View 1 (cartoon, rainbow, N blue to C red):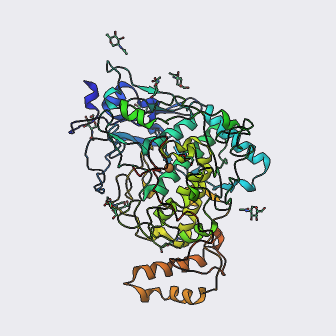
View 2 (cartoon, rainbow, N blue to C red; view 1 turned 30 degrees about the vertical axis):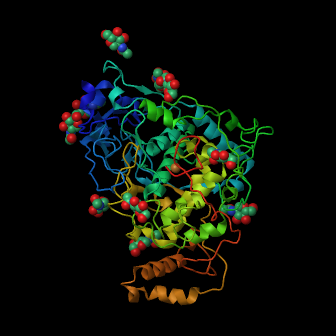
Amino acid sequence: MAVCTLAVFTAVFVCSVSGQFPRACMTVDGIVSKECCPELISPDGQNLGVCGENASRGSCQDLTVPDIPHNPEYPFTNVDDRERWPNKFFNRTCACQGNFWGYNCGECRYGWTGESCAQPAPPVLRKNIQNCTAEERRRFVDALDQAKRSVHPDYIICKEHWLGLLGPNGTEPQVTNVTIYDLFVWMHYYAVRDTLLGPNQPWREIDFAHEGPAYNTWHRMHLLWLEREIQKMLGDESFALHYWDWSVGGTECDVCTDDMMGARHPLNPTALSPGSPFSRWQSVCMSLDDYNRLVTLCNGTDEGPIFRNPGGNVDRPDFRTLPSRRDVGRCLDLPLYDNPNWTETAERSFRNTLEGFDHPDGEYDPSIRSLHNLAHLFLNGTASITHASANDPIFVLLHSYSDAIFDAWLVLQNASSLVSYPEEGAPIGHNLNSTMVPFFPVVTNADVFQFSQDIGYAFDALPERVPEGPSQLTSLEIFGMGAGAFIGCVVCVLVAFGIARKLSAKRWGGPDGKGVYQPLLKEEDGRGRCYTADTTVTFMDNDVRCNVDRR
Ligand SMILES: *[C@@H]1O[C@H](CO)[C@@H](O)[C@H](O)[C@H]1NC(C)=O
Ligand SMILES: *[C@@H]1O[C@H](CO)[C@@H](O)[C@H](O)[C@H]1NC(C)=O
Ligand SMILES: *[C@@H]1O[C@H](CO)[C@@H](O)[C@H](O)[C@H]1NC(C)=O
Ligand SMILES: *[C@@H]1O[C@H](CO)[C@@H](O)[C@H](O)[C@H]1NC(C)=O
Ligand SMILES: *[C@@H]1O[C@H](CO)[C@@H](O)[C@H](O)[C@H]1NC(C)=O
Ligand SMILES: *[C@@H]1O[C@H](CO)[C@@H](O)[C@H](O)[C@H]1NC(C)=O
Ligand SMILES: *[C@@H]1O[C@H](CO)[C@@H](O)[C@H](O)[C@H]1NC(C)=O
Ligand SMILES: *[C@@H]1O[C@H](CO)[C@@H](O)[C@H](O)[C@H]1NC(C)=O
Ligand SMILES: *[C@@H]1O[C@H](CO)[C@@H](O)[C@H](O)[C@H]1NC(C)=O
Ligand SMILES: *[C@@H]1O[C@H](CO)[C@@H](O)[C@H](O)[C@H]1NC(C)=O
Ligand SMILES: [Cu+2]
């Protein structure tokens, strides 16, 4: 059957599933030939040829994604079609020239603009939503709401796994339209979901977006994608996402008001206020267990309203208070982006600490959840369920702030030049040159491991290091300038390098000269929360078991 040509499988159970692709490529021919090279039609209706080749924008080329060695957590080959993304689906795609980009070379790379994509785009400014005017907030909420209602003009989702991808007769691609926001939700679900080894046989030790070095890069790309889609939807290149500084709210969700992410319902503590348009949103991709049981994919149908109960997890007092500013400051001190074994147990890893599996100073403690994870868990609702969390629009603001912390770290540690992002041996999909699932056209982790300004956006301010304490800066600075003396002590060199960078970082909102540098601070957070949990959290499982054992 035609379907069998989709990929060369060797495993016994072959239940991998399909991804999200341009509608133009999801024809029987496209799927069978594994070629996705659509024509580009200019805004005035002119056919510029396949990949815009008649306007010298690109051409149709083989795309062979290398098989980068990953860790043994995922032990299969040719079982999951997210492997070597997107080669299980397409092996010929548009290769765009210069700064042209897009599935048919109809767009510019992130950070570029103009007719020929040759001008650097002025970065759009992502603001703290608390500092936005009423008009700016309304615009942002309206844009999200419009994205929730607008069918994506070019992309579709596949609603069946590969065996069923062309339908029972091999003639009908099992694809469906999806709205822009729901596609955003679906992509997150798709990256997180389990490998399907057979009916009710999920392989759970896989996640292309969490518990590994790609945590920051994947979510950064996810937001960039949404921001660009909303810009196109509004016809406004200056549209920017905002962020929620979740390090200042304490026990309150300060953005949970009707002019922002929706207040609490007056009668139902887990529902959203009818005064917010988000109270009318329906979640998609909730029923991971059902998809696993039926060996199918989320097909984008409505599965009930968003729920949220900020600070309401009475069983877990440690989840009832948001991370603190100090927690954020401490993670910024960690000089290494990541550390072996590059999973959720990595110690002294900036990535694992920001993701929230380490204590904010980088110490691994399986019983705690901090920073990003804690912000999710605090919300005690849809946003706390990993595979479904993007349904709650607060996800956008929450991750935008996590991305601001990532950006602050890049600036403070000038990590672009550091070697702590693994090139191999990380979980599948998490190596530096791995393509991120399910973005199409392909983007690697390396592509977005750079300053936000170089990919088209900036923050109004960046989080800072822990500001208090007596100043030891001067002596450390001197060490920093003599960094050459410390070769052989990698950490010392990296620390010193970080300090040196800090001095030239002020223009990005770096700390002022009074900030003290206290590497790997040990003392307890003044509020003493979130480090006392006795059970571990499933931040990864099905839709209800959020706070019990790890998967
Ligand atoms: C791409 O896939 C098609 C269809 O399976 C196959 O015939 C072709 O040889 C592949 N090309 C490359 C470069 O792998
Ligand atoms: C693009 O150029 C090729 C080669 O010159 C030509 O054969 C083809 O018809 C052109 N396509 C379009 C859509 O104009
Ligand atoms: C990573 O380290 C943890 C803790 O030592 C261990 O349980 C886990 O199996 C390791 N994972 C991999 C993929 O090596
Ligand atoms: C499949 O083909 C059969 C026989 O030609 C036809 O009756 C049936 O409607 C087709 N099903 C679909 C989903 O196209
Ligand atoms: C999907 O959306 C496209 C573009 O809006 C439209 O042309 C097409 O008819 C839609 N398909 C279905 C099945 O609704
Ligand atoms: C979508 O999936 C749901 C649950 O997985 C299922 O009940 C429903 O029939 C599906 N709808 C379509 C149109 O495939
Ligand atoms: C919310 O908190 C309740 C009460 O502690 C808990 O039982 C439930 O699992 C939590 N739900 C989510 C989605 O976090
Ligand atoms: C980061 O360091 C590299 C190499 O040391 C240097 O070339 C680059 O300019 C630095 N970036 C910034 C933004 O300072
Ligand atoms: C990753 O990409 C960089 C830049 O293209 C290259 O120098 C490096 O060798 C690649 N690493 C691997 C493991 O492929
Ligand atoms: C936001 O507003 C507060 C108080 O109005 C101010 O202190 C702060 O500097 C502002 N932040 C930014 C990033 O503009
Ligand atoms: Cu996520």
